[in-house]
Image 1 (cartoon, rainbow, N blue to C red):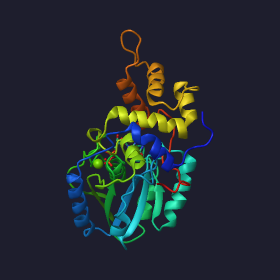
Image 2 (image 1 turned 30 degrees about the vertical axis):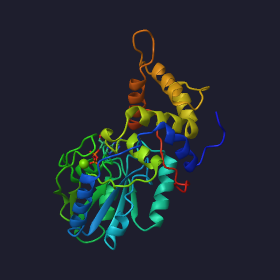
Image 3 (image 1 turned 90 degrees about the vertical axis):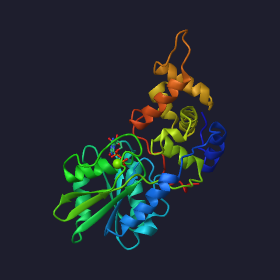
Image 4 (image 1 turned 180 degrees about the horizontal axis):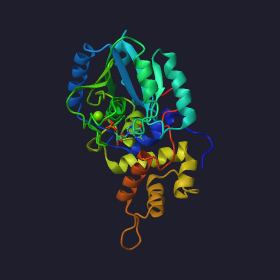
Amino acid sequence: MSTRIPTETELVEILTPLAPHGVQWFPGHMAKAQRELNAKLRLVNTVVEVVDARMPRSSRHPHLATWIGQKQHVIALTKIDLADAADTRAWKKQLQRSGPTVIGVDAVKGQGIKALLAAIGKNKTARVLVAGVPNSGKSSLINRACGRSAARVGATPGITRRQQWLRADANIEFLDTPGLLWPKIENLLQALKLAWLASIGEKAYDTYQAAATLAVWLYYTHPLVLKERYGITDAAPEAAALLNAIGRRRGCIVAGGEVNLEQAAQVLLHDLRTGRLGRITLDKPEDPGV
Ligand SMILES: Nc1nc2c(ncn2[C@@H]2O[C@H](COP(=O)(O)OP(=O)(O)O)[C@@H](O)[C@H]2O)c(=O)[nH]1
Ligand SMILES: [Mg+2]
């Protein structure tokens, strides 16, 4: 396998032909969500920006910090249980440098929620908007903070449809929002990461192409993962061969002993999303981004 990890620009070049359909979502309801967000921002004095710790660069809305302006800004780095711990520490430092308080959380188990509430509640009465891309853990975080199943949770992007206020304690009230995406994600790698981690709904991309790009991306950036999880050591950076090996290892076999590549594609994406590939951070803090 190659010794030098390609730069992000090189990775985009490598992956582009593997995803000829790209990642395309209908921006209409996202444009509406963006307008609604701006209206709701007038109702709050605090914003918790929910950022998936596995992609702290790719899952941040490019304009949100500007919209937050002088309001209290706290970043909740969610899914720290699925992210690389050293990368999460580095990301915390890096994000904090730009101003906001950054708290790592496991929004399902509740780790970090107390610290988050303490950070929010330093000021007076906090009216808090919770904003982030679909599937980043907004509803789970609010449920944990409020100590009951108040906001609906789901693995499907877009499950939060209406805005609703929820009370965490006497001084803190939360407003859940539908997931935010922005109409133009220029960079294919960023769009792919959002698709790989299910922040972009599956209608927006081709499952096989998403998995093919993921397999090749892993080959270059995380060869040990392919080795340890699927026993792949001597493959070439060739998507079908990688998915074939993954499918064989994970039992995606049809009659006649052939690998069902579509199923292997599903399995690879599922393995990444559920942490079965180990704790992986897709955005490296030291990368400049594309
Ligand atoms: N392992 C893990 N899973 C999480 C975490 N936060 C949310 N999830 C899961 O991610 C999915 C989306 O969560 P949800 O709260 O509905 O995200 P929302 O779309 O931003 O409101 C659900 O399956 C949650 O169980 C976390 O910190 N760790
Ligand atoms: Mg939600």
